[in-house]
Length: 220
Image 1: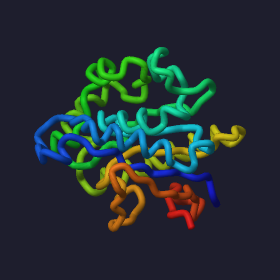
Image 2: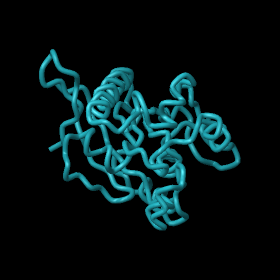
Image 3: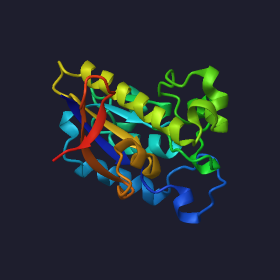
């Protein structure tokens, strides 16, 4: 049973992709990466169908989401003088389960206080303070162990199921997920997926059996 369409987007070029400094905590996009994200958004062919943009809490993913989808996101996520965003636009959701899976500093998210300072107009309520130690140390629910990653995929797909259900009465009923190259392999079950930075692929969230959680299936 189809639950709805999801577009996976890989973040644009970030600083550690260029200088190979993987010890830098939560690196930002490069200038070229920001420009590429903006250009990507101007050519993304499904903008009119997207009601929710879900992003990893990594700085580079959030920056990609804001740059690429400023033409469809709600105005409240942007400074009024920027002219970005639209009335009754798409909702931006920041979700810990969409972060990258390695324990390297470059794949570790900033703490919530830092993110609030970087992006004061965004809602980080889905980043519970009680779990901050786990995501900062990549332990517990956010470790790099195989079974933990698999559990995170299940949680994210269940989150996507809820978001798609909430959009069914709207004309903008599809969801974009801005995430990372390695985690995307686990999320899709496709070890060969390797999108450009930035780039997208279309999927359908489906129930294959009623006793199993939903999963993403490549759109045909």
